[in-house]
Image (cartoon, rainbow, N blue to C red; front, side):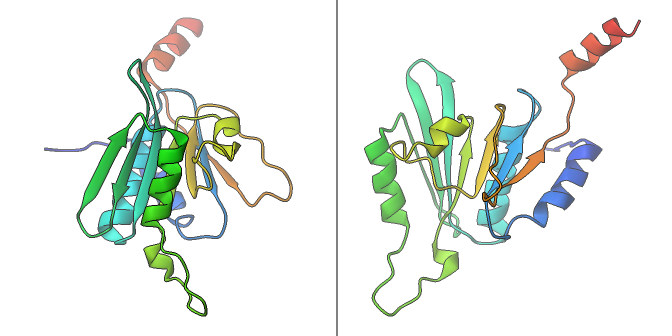
Length: 173
């Protein structure tokens, strides 16, 4: 089995790797269908399988029977997945997989899961009642407004869909 990637995605990955462990959030924006969700999954598995980090991925689903999906990778080869969770469930899962600091002890950063959120709007992830935030990585097709005091880094996934190329060809004939 082979996995083919565009050269621009290889370049994007080289740039993106430098952002994996920097302070602040990273927001991936781009047109619908260019591969943001796929790229976010690659990041999740890289962090869990190569860096041995705990990962919590929360994704918006586009099906009638489920609103969201949650995947937890423990960084040691095990995983759990659930779907159509209520906010209280997401909060409970986040609390369960995040170690609490005991008085005088510092929590090992590798034990704190890295949270990735995919497919929601900025308002949804910033709503404290949803359980989607705080996050480290966020992928969205929507605009993401960054305030001056916000440490978020915005990166654009540059990619063309086949339909975009065909449309461009028609417009430039």
